[in-house]
Every structure is written in structure tokens, then in C-alpha cells.
Length: 113
Image (cartoon, rainbow, N blue to C red; front, side, top):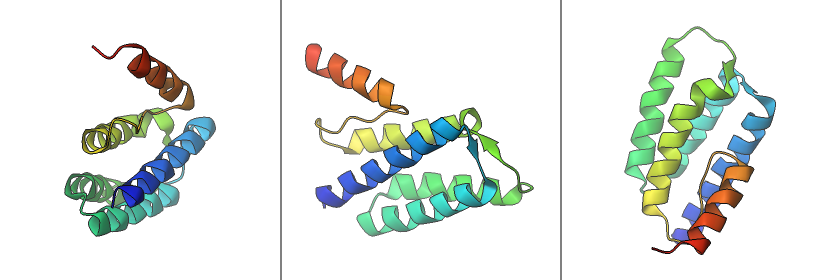
């Protein structure tokens, strides 16, 4: 099961990197991402991720269709990654950007106290 969780984490990180580079996320892309995440987390038994995603989808669906800046959805993404990092083994490093992942990885391996 950990293999599938790692794959989900990798997919989330790819989407985050894509959105960070674009800095603009369409309403439909965000809805599609959340629906996919709900399905995947349900199958993997990641109840917290499923609930977070459902709650956020409900908010997004109640809003008028618009584009979102990366910074406007950052708190949700941070919450997801924090939840996943609590569920993940030590070898899975999560962050909201490639640069931060590299920095976090270096810090984790350099400081084991």
C-alpha cells in the first residue's frame, strides 16, 4: 500500500510544481484535481485527505467559476502535504516547491537531532 501512497504523493508534488510555475489555476482544473484526490484517497484509506479534499471541493463548487492564484490555494495544499507527511515514512520528503523539497531534504539529512 505504501507504494500507492508514494505514487499519490508524487502526483500531488507534480501538480503543485505545475501550478507554482503557472501561478494560475483554473476553476475546472482545481475541481478535477480535488475529485481525483478524493477518489484516490478513498481507495487508499487516507480518510483525512479525503475529508480535506471534500470540504475544499464544497467551498470551490459554491463559488463562482474563476481562476485561482497559487498563493490563494497554498493553505489547502500545505494542509494536504502536512497530513501526508504525518502518514509517510521518513524517506518521503514533502514540500510545496522543488527548491523547498531540496532544502528540506538537506536539512533532514544534515540534522537528525
